[in-house]
Image (cartoon, rainbow, N blue to C red; front, top):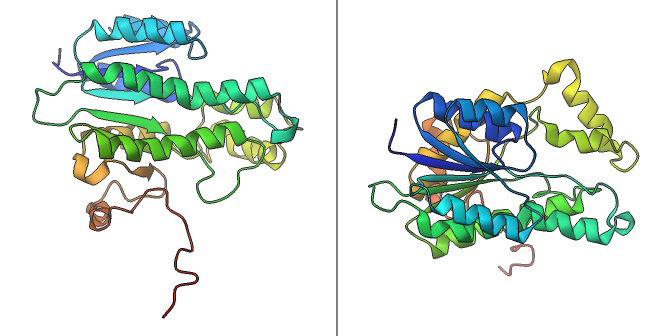
Length: 274
């Protein structure tokens, strides 16, 4: 068994599950949280994972889980794999309590986990501990009908940059996995009227067993690449597994400018005087 310890919040999510399986197959210690018990949980426990039940909409449940995880071996990698697209629909039509709860689950609760687990990161090895979150659409356009989910992901992108600037002994990154065949799309499929045109796009992408989607194995490879890469290259940045050349040395170009792959205002030079 490896001395490495990796934690996945929402390990029962599809990406969390396959990432955990990959690590466990390589003899790495894996711990994680789940909200609803599934066959995925049973399989991971049989492979040696340590699982803790946690409801990310409940502060006490989060704090109890943090306490239990901090009693385990210090961690080297922390992955936050939580994501919910609900509520779907125009902001003005959404129930504001459901909208607020989505912000809590998709952003605030995840940051609470990071805050609570950071003191137990492993700082004794030569490589920096790494934290990875997941981004979504909306950085370059207005993703209508998904405002709570989108604003949470935008906040996460900026939070990764802030954390990386403040905590220089740890690497913080965020990954947009693209269209992947996972159960996060179920809420869209169940809300054809509220989801608007994205309902038809989702149906199109998931048809024929999701053959148009980005392969799960490539998402896992990209996660492992980010987590094993030097902080100077990946720290504070927002990556796309689909569009970025992370599999080649060309990715080294991003080192040249600290603004690369980060949230920035477009058009600052629009009224620049010559």
